[in-house]
Image (cartoon, rainbow, N blue to C red; front, side):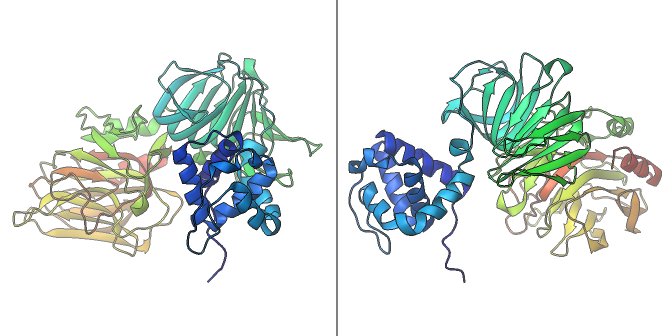
Length: 518
């Protein structure tokens, strides 16, 4: 077992820096004094970082008297700041300073901020956005104008529009600064940018380098140690002060810039890592689904509150998204945005109450799915319930099989008996799959990527309804909560889920599979 102390998260380091700055300025409240004392007493990593930060700023001696005394077990005494620094300074300062220089990019890697100015951009759309300006809650209502200064998008998505026509979509968590009308400082997080011809030269500055627009659409992912740029359309210029030769990067290409070397490195182009618009695009796939008259069609449209699940079919069987511990529930989908789920760790899922069962033995359910892992009984869509001693309710149980992680479907026939089929190999991770099952009055068929992978006889469907349809989790008998013993949370992204009270043919499913780009 390693003797290394547990590392601090980026959020913990950021909070430690905030407290250290307030200590330097003698503005700590009594509650913050207690918070800092507890953090230093209980965490070796925090003491190391604090020692390095103190040396880095060289100003903590301004307010040593704010600390009280105390003696926690197996820890240096709680006391004045200089007492902690004296104990930890020599063996730890160099390493702590190096770590802080990388991890606290906002404070120490950013170029000098100009005087607060603006406003430079306007909130044009948002979804579940929780924004802080200089660590105070900020308004995200459409039409809000934002000025220069430290901004922290803690939750959700935020779309900003500049007078020049530049449109930015920021994904939480993100730290940024609207430096001026032509420059965004991005310390951490993802942003996609659409830049019109009249705004050529718009720049996204990161701790690793600057990305200068040449009339383009691109995405940037920034972190303390490196940044990535992916060019969707047009070209960008990647430059930094230490590298004399700037990189001209064309569309469908990507590069990573390491903060230490500052040298661009070619990487695989991954446009699917970025949300490029908060509007849901149309296209051939959507038109094909609608032509088959679904009873429900969940495109995973991004909504302002990030809590509504919108059915775009004529029936409008809307649901709600239960976010659990997720910072946001939208991610790049196969077509537009998808429903982002984090498995058992976040317990995020969606519920559609009073979802109607198919009135006859004809049913099709299809979806685009992406799995990052295979939790036990991971759920795509389940209309399934066992109501005590009463008759079993619901018609289908669609997801991954037990711990094996193979694609499976079970339905209840007219007598309430379970009929099921599954694939033989686990569902491949980290890639999109078009999955579907069909009951046509004689047979239950399972499909993946337009190909039938399993089938068995099934002549009828259970007429007893379930209380609700669950997406991303199996629900309890009441349809309100995940089933306590086998909740089956999905880890990954679900998109374009459609339910039909009719049997689609193999040719129709192949056409749907081929209607989206690879």
